[in-house]
Amino acid sequence: MTDNPTTPGHPQHVVSIDQGLALKAAAERLESEFGDTFDAETIDRFLYAAHAHFAHHASVPNFLPLLAERFAQQQLRALARVEGKHHDGKPTVLFLCTHNAGRSQMAAAFFAELAGEDAVAWSGGSDPSDQVNPAVVQAMSERGIDISHEYPKPFTDEIVQAADVVITMGCGDTCPVIPGRRYEEWTFDDPAGRDVDAVRPIRDAIESEYAVC
Image 1: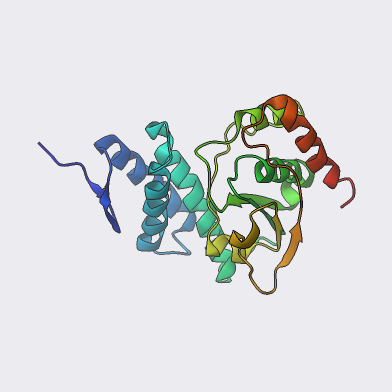
Image 2: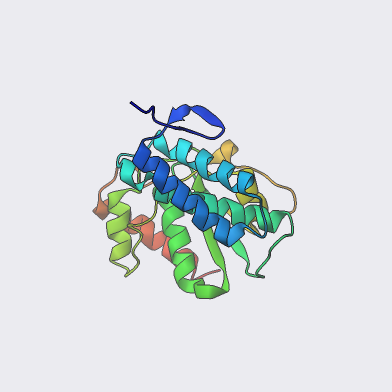
């Protein structure tokens, strides 16, 4: 019987054969995008580290390789920007809260809707939840914005350094402070544990923030 493989750099993190094949395919896609910028070892390191992180939280293992690929892609884009290897000229705004399951997800979604292709919205949390709050997903769908495909994720040094503006939303002392970045603090109630009726006023307050920006 063949033992399940471990992820590179994470010898204690065991993956199934199916997961291993999916991660190999993800690595190939990332290498096709970033192969001219980073070597395969760097790409694999970000991918498998992301997989190891989400493996501790994911309730549906089949989605793990996709989540890992998406997060690794974001980190690699951020690292390329930080190292001056690629910059598309688009301003990047990073929204941070504690769980990245409510406030920061809504704020990033509204920003992306308004900015279109002219800017980039990222979000993250100091202590990411297992999933985006379903009441938040429903409340945003009422505004015609689908965030059902989003997922809570941590922020990393590369992502914070690559952002032009960092908007914090209740993560307190755990929010990173990088010199040279523009910071704003937005104060809204935390929608964690609330139903959609209670989330709607928070959503509306976040949306109204853009009317005065």
